[in-house]
Image (tube, rainbow, N blue to C red; front, side, top):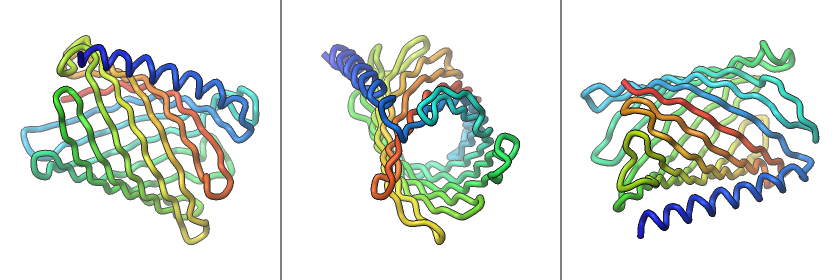
Amino acid sequence: MIRTCTKKLLILSIFLLGSFTFQLYAQKNFTGFAEPSVSLNIKPESPWSYNFTLANRDVLYKNEEFNAEVKHIELAQYTSLNVGLYGKITAGIRYRFIEMFDDYKDNEVRLVEQYSYSTKIKNLKASHRFRIAQRFRERTTHRFRYRFLVDIPLNGQRSDVKEFSLSLSTESVLEMGKEEKPSLGQRLNSSLSYQLSSDAKFKFGIEYRYRNYTQTPRTELFLLTGLSLSL
């Protein structure tokens, strides 16, 4: 029964995202991106864990035409501490190399502080994430984010080697700064993960972002791929 429901959910999510993506190309304020990444997770026998990520963002579609160009390369590091049975506190830093691709913009530093909480009901894992971030570039922007995510194994009670899992999430984003008006945005994400081995996972996903819908709305679509390695 559970396996049948997860398969139906997967088919429905793919259909909705496909229909949604087709409609996006008709919008004028629309940009399409590709964002591949590689991450290394270090989990020693302690409450602490560490993540190192290398990613780049490429513009695929902008100004109503296809135009492939690199937007930035990013290095990120997160340090997490388990709190209780289901909670985790995380602090991180992200650095974006932008100047080498755009002469009119500066490189960017981001500081991240977050708290996440996860629960599991049978084979379904639900998690809440509260994140605060500071963006330092030509101006300083503060971000406040809340994400709700559901992760579902598609081949049984859990995701074992050579098995798939489906993740669905929604995230609200509030941005504000001294030199900019507050803006609200929403993100919807659907991704499919494949457990290559006990220490390696590959993920492919689509994320839709509806940004600044209180002022000048614009939409973005991300094609996400990621390889995650664990030690």
